[in-house]
Image (cartoon, rainbow over all chains, first blue to last red; front, side, top):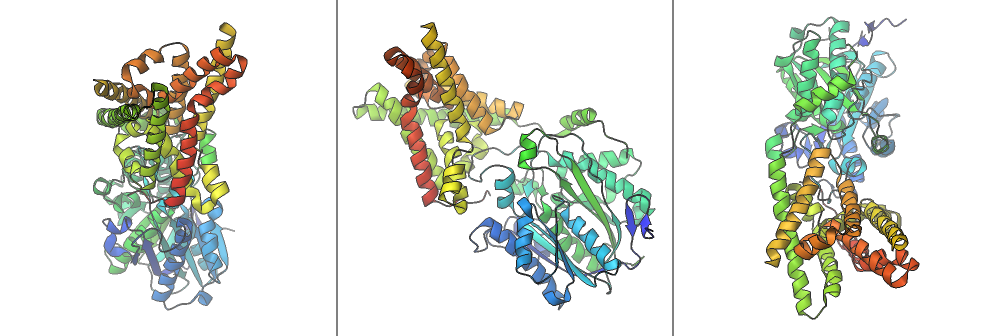
Length: 339
Length: 146
Length: 118
């Protein structure tokens, strides 16, 4: 019997896993953004002395993991499972990162929603008694994503105003069955929602209904009121998606305007950095959470956060075949208190 | 949450997305595109001064412009021009060269046969297919009408 | 005067391309294909020749000019060589540009490495 389930899509943990350490690493552009003081490592260039951008992305995952391990005085041997994902074909960055680490590995793909997907599954493994310590990590890289999903970097094309900028970065979090928090207390797993958007340059609009659906469902299932949260933050809806999500959530009777923002908006200064609508990618919510939000929680500046990473489920093939872009969003509640 | 009507949603999204800055984009496209063509005219007259006839100049001009487009792509400057020039740097033959060099250069790490050579025409290939193809069709029609 | 004509005609063709990209969400590849094909067709029905005579490089440097060279080449070759000209005319007229694109494209990709966008 599913004794830990609340409502139709939410889990309430009996032994909420504690996030004991995080590691965040970002590229040079992100390192010039508004959150630059929160990251552990900022790269000087997006190759990191590697031979290819793909190698660099994989190395970033390893470095994010090692940073988190060092901070918690743990080694690879102390970790029971690695939950990792990225955006590249066959999630190869994660596979190659795991190749260097002697940790049992679950590879995940949820497009840009992968960070909360990995945190959800990692937390379930810990709460369920299957693991004492797990690592959840995701990464994305502007140059690897751009060449896989869009155009060559040197092509003289114009980016539409609705486009988003894939974040170069990786964030890792270590979850443990015991410690003093912050804790993952709830998980609301999203359904795939397809609003029929076919324009791949407008991911925010494609993902906003999924985010709204998950957030509304979270409040219905968990019984939380909006005031219970200090912050609700979506993964990478960016400016266009954020406005749509707010509208859709308001229509369902929840006004979250005052405590709501989006990682894709926080990570860049859109005007100054010419990132159009904002940031995107698995790395976006990963570094904003492991860098910024986690540290703000440790300081006690925010005490309960709903993190909702959002993903757009498409591939170059599906787009060329004229398919629409469905969205997915997973929410986790992170709280400084266990209840 | 209630199911979303895809048609209503599309209309709603179309209403809120920022519109392209048509006027600004067109002015830039006009100026840069015009300048590249003026430069092409300059090259044509230059090579004709060196004794090439009109037909030879019509072959030499694109070759020189293609070289320049390829070279500035290699230097990493052409995409910066394209950011504000838009079609002004895509439509001239230099943009054709850019569309060949940019994928070729980028896929070097995937090897010189299946990377560089195969990806070289990922954008320009269709141009040749439709260009050559339509010229053959025009030839067939012209042959039978004439 | 030739320079001003080239500037005007070339600029206008590029503006048409810009409007296609902004207004219809066509990708650069679609715009280029459309322009080459329309260049061939406009040449075949005799519209592009006067534009090229007026605009000079303004009409021949943009991609429709590539189509113009193809169309003009095939018609001349059919006149000269008959049925074989159907297949040789267009490509012969543009062989220089295509070979240059292949050669310089390869050369540049060997010499230079791609840099990320800023």
